[in-house]
Amino acid sequence: MAIISTAGLARTFQTKLGPVEAVRGIDLTVREGEILGFLGPNGAGKTTTLRMLTTLLAPTGGAATVAGCDLATDSAGVRRACGYVAQSGGVDPQITVREELVTQGRLYRLTKDQAAGRAEELARDLGLTDLLDRKCGALSGGQRRRLDIAMALTHRPKVLFLDEPTTGLDPGSRADLWDLVRRLRDEHGTTVFLTTHYLDEADALSDRLVIVDQGVVVAEGTPSALKLRYGGSIDAPLQDTFLAITGRSAEPAGRPPVAV
Amino acid sequence: MLTHDTALIYGRYLRQSLRSRFALFFGVLMPLLYLLFFGPLLTGLPLGGRGSSWQVLVPGLLLQLGLFGASFAGFAIIMENGQGVVERMRVTPVSRLALLLGRVLRDATVFVFQAVLLVLAALVMGLRAPLPGVLIGFAFVALLTVSLASLSYALAMKVRTPQEFGPAVNALTLPMMLLSGLMLPMTLGPAWLDVLSRFIPFRYLVDAVRDAYVGSYATAHMLYGVLVAVAFAALAVTVGTRVFRTAGA
Image 1: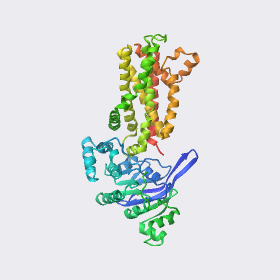
Image 2 (image 1 turned 135 degrees about the vertical axis):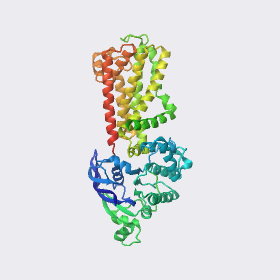
Image 3 (image 1 turned 90 degrees about the horizontal axis):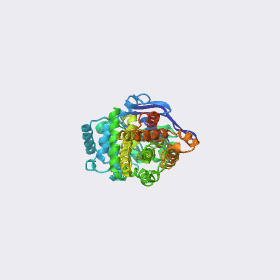
């Protein structure tokens, strides 16, 4: 059953140099409980699409539903159903982990006690218990990412949007994050919609890939189906497959993660 | 829900202000310097109003505090945009109006606190004014900071970088201060300057507070001051909420 479906979802930005079509028309469906890898070269419209699906940005064309809620008419329903972790995260470095988690719970209309309890629970679940009284700014990159995800899971969303969740993480933290994403899906049935530039990550984590280029979907399918179709063999590297589809390189897979 | 959310956002940012004590007191420094080094120059001059020169100067300094302080409130949100905090909150069901109101009410609290400090210092310098008048002055500071902080946040959400934001605000606030007669009453100047200043909304606020400081509450100045301050606040909060609701890019 589709938990996200979009039809011709588009966003044009008006700039001083004229209109820029960041997203020209995205048609995709995401099944419930699926981990979907959303790939594309820089500037393909990945983040813009995510920001539209999470109600941060109004589409200028097309339509979408998230967990049965219409994006255009029921943004409150969409917000209840989804959690979002932006590339930049979203915590104040001066505030303690506990205070951020509790405030987030209160923003989701939990009572004080519920919010405090939920913060403890999330901290336990994501290995942040010992860090609760530390300032967010004092966390390592991997710990920060786990906190960002904990914040987004506060209201037990059906869909979790992750925008380049492992950019800037060391290999150990990346592996931990992959495990976390798989565990979320396996234990809670959470649908995960993630963008990444690391093709090994997309390959290892995703049930299905959607590849966008210049604001439209150019290919979709399981990693092996895409490799077979565009890379020539089921064992083709996803890197070559990606290049065959977009005619350009993503971030080279072998290059170490670069902090943004 | 609006009250709940506003209280939540207010609490978050008030705690933030309380954590940086330095910033809390620093804002009062500029008007305090005017009070100490500019105020004594006026004591013997004929300023045209009733009461002492302090009753003319202190209302101006109070609004100057609000004008310069609240206009720069947007800097904080530019930083928060960089950290992703604003977007993270906008994905939750929190009321958009509360995201703005919680912040501007915090600003009003901080600036009224600084205004109290300034008036206490002025009392030491020689200010004598009726208590109701002083309280009316604080109310105007609160309204002015709500208005200017709302517009400042709205501008900061639009321009996005401190490099654009700082000069834009500076270019607006300095002429506003000079043309509204915050330092000296505009009636002292030539007719063209007096007329020009009537197009600056703060002129009406400062005239009203000056009346309040000499104990005249039922005056035309007071009426215009209240009308302008309330209308300005309503306009500014409307603009600010619109920006928070639709902020894209």
